[in-house]
Image 1 (tube, rainbow, N blue to C red):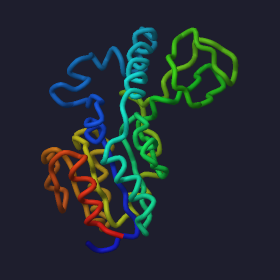
Image 2 (cartoon, rainbow, N blue to C red):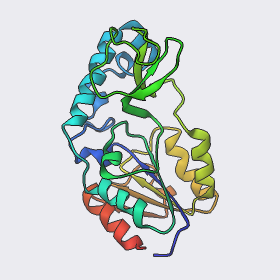
Image 3 (cartoon, one colour):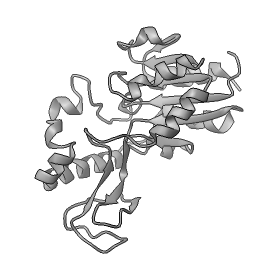
Length: 234
């Protein structure tokens, strides 16, 4: 394959599925099991914070019980070894990229292991334990104002301006394990392609937006991601 100066990789729930984490939009995904309007909106949190905290506490505990897989490891290795500039934009809120050794990451939908105080101080900090209304903010000392540092439905994803610049400047855009149905992430490939990047889809099966990609590789992420990166070479 040719050498690429600037590579942008978008990852979705499909890359973490083989580690044992639930996806969202599959037939057996989280939104098939739970009512998102009761768990993943600011209104839901205002209406029933205990229920929302319980849901995210369970997800936080689940992430502790799984490990990064070969796809995460391959991407981390690529970050370290590829001579071009590599950025990973992830829609995932788990920390499996980091545990694999990933460094140059953007969590556009937030992180399970971070919390945010909305009681005035606005502090965002690492948090790996259960969270509840009684939890005191380590920064301001107030209780009852902490929430998961997660982008809920109706909220604006993080880092969009920086991501837009990256997409316009990259010469290779790779989408891994994402449905391609949720905006703004679903539109990243169009932006990258419009500015001249080669576009590649790695997924279990072709998505509805397959025609927008120059190439597609399909199968288990733990198989096709390491293979693709090995073929990409130094």
